[in-house]
Image (cartoon, rainbow, N blue to C red; front, side, top):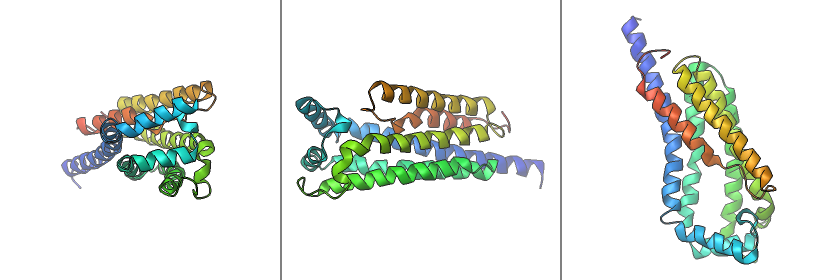
Amino acid sequence: MSVAVEMDTDLAARRRVGWAFLAAAGIWVLYIVLAFTISADYEEALVDASDALDTPVNRLPAETLAQISQDHPWSNVSAAVLLFGPALLILATRRAAAVTGDRWGTRFAWLGAIVWWFYMLLNAGLVADPQDLPPLTRDLDVLTVPLVSAGSVLALLAFIVAALALSRHWRRVASIVAAGVAAGLLVLSLVASVASDWDEPVPPIGLLPAELILGIALLVGTRRGA
């Protein structure tokens, strides 16, 4: 294989990985847009219920969440979008692993996805009668924070591992910076959760800036190891 062909193959692989991480970031951008548009009334209803019951949003009774969800059916669009976040992270880490040979990023991504999809499955039970919710769904006031936090921590770890592995092949500085951003947000989120007495979970949207940095960096460069 000629040097030119090797360089083209390397560049094509880099672009595939870069676009995968940008797609993973795009899901969170889309979610933010939806949260401030078609789901804005739903978000406001959650805050109003939190104030009325003097309870943190993530500790609201499942019966209250079910009623709010049924009163604002468009919120289900945002929930459906969130299902794709873990899938795209798995895709990105798999593409990275094909280059680096490191599989831990993908393993963490899968574990985080399983936790997150299980949480979303429990949320799907909110479509039932608020007074007759499925088992576990009725315990969302207790399960939300630990499940969301576990899924987020695993997803952030998946990104950090994948980015550090990529730093040995492409865009060393940018990859390390992206991993550092993810690690910093993970630590800050954990501190904030502890400070809130675990009323606030570690948010998965912390992946957004790190995925943007890495995705853009991989698409910008043209020289191996740049």
